[in-house]
Image (cartoon, rainbow, N blue to C red; front, side, top):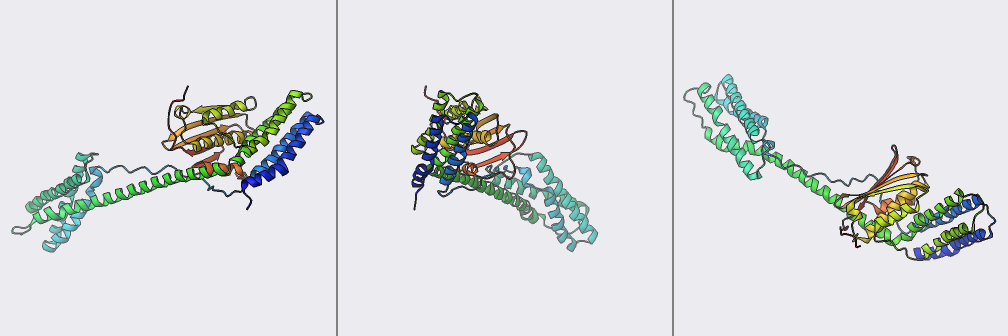
Length: 416
């Protein structure tokens, strides 16, 4: 099986070297006019470098579509207060139905109904009063259970005394203490168990969702690591080389008169440097923000790029080289795409520490709006492989946003 390195060597020998040689010879001869030479430089980027980068991007993708991935976990539910663990309607209705079932068997229909109604309303009022007094106070669940049990036990005494005085016939042998000490506490505690069961379910769901988000971040780190090891040359061709050649074509086209000797030397340096880039291992700066600032300076005069970086990110020493490289690559891709594909002349980029585990890169530009049917090419696959989630949206300006896993990023003052 031919490895990606072997394929690269073959393509360099069969495609890249001949194309560079032909273009350099044309520049030396000086036969091409300025605009025609600019077109040839563009063609070199579009017909040689771009296809080569896409050809090399077949080394087994690790990408999964991360557009719109939900990386915000469900919040843990609030611990229920005492008033949340009782329900006056539930308790009152339970007493009304329970006592009515018993009293209608031993009392006349009207008396039994009135006694059950008095019992239910009295318990409703006392439990409601407990909720008002307790308010939003929180205690351990066992302590709250004792309070609820005692309140419900005591709540049975007033209606019993009222019924005994107004409704029960003389000589009725009715024992309230069994109901008060066993039945009523069980009624109150049964509702508390319902509430605690729902609270436990929501808590477990939030924990599972937190584990899901953590898994997304770990998956992003693994996917990013694989991409950086296997596809760095591909990205260098796709973004760095294309950007440099494309920028040189714009400079040539924007000039006037005959091409000077200095311009020829500069064009040759840019074109031949493409070969150096793909035949040597690229070295990324450990200072990701510094490298991005160099990119901003590179496009100065052709596109006004502003960069706003959180102090925590800018003043940090990035312990995770993979994160540092990914931050550079994603930022470069956002800027170069806006300029090359959207013809943007203004870009505002922000890099913020969006959570303890992530950094968010956002770039807004005044370029061409993104169509809903845009081609998902190598750049989109790059976002899929290097980010936890990303988005590309139209508004007053086109906005690209990417969230990068940054759990290993440590803050340490820069050395002077």
